[in-house]
Length: 259
Image (cartoon, rainbow, N blue to C red):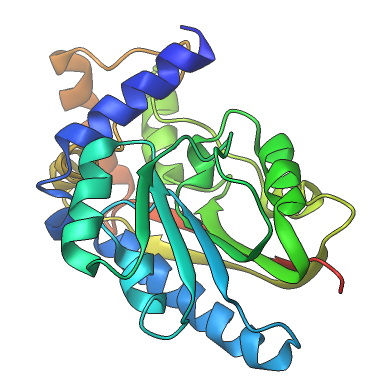
């Protein structure tokens, strides 16, 4: 499957999940709250007051709702999935411009004082290249702030597959060090942190249902979903080997372009 085909498949899955996303996306809501807290802590120390803001991968609006009331200015809120953009607009109101856009290739010209993204960067085909392009859109003193997934994401899920000689269709992710190193040279790292967060209780079947409900179950390129019998084997093994459940590995990065 080519990158454009894979992107279209991702967009279709998130479109289909727009109606159930808010109910099932507790981890995404938590990540948005933490990223927003970091942004609000850093902004008062900056000489640049954000006035033009770009959000990549808004989803149903978790991060938008956290920050839009606190940062006045010209907001551009985007997602690759049209139904998610509609959902975000309905939830967050008319105080922003909303558009359907692939965040890896922005259709908007800079400069922006703040570019934000909550748990969307893990879907980028080229993370270093995308961060370089987004950095080019920043105004002097502007911030790039994102949360994404790290290499320990769903570790118990992957381990259960490996123990049974199977390959998980969920993607692998880079380490925190790799993500930090992917920042373009022109940006100064202002905050970096990692967090392990339970995905959804201790029931493996609920974990799978939760991924489907948020639209995050698109198989990684070169993989395929498990057959029903294989899935039942993985769920049984996971219940025995990881009674505490599966965890997200969240990584937060805030960087700034020099004045």
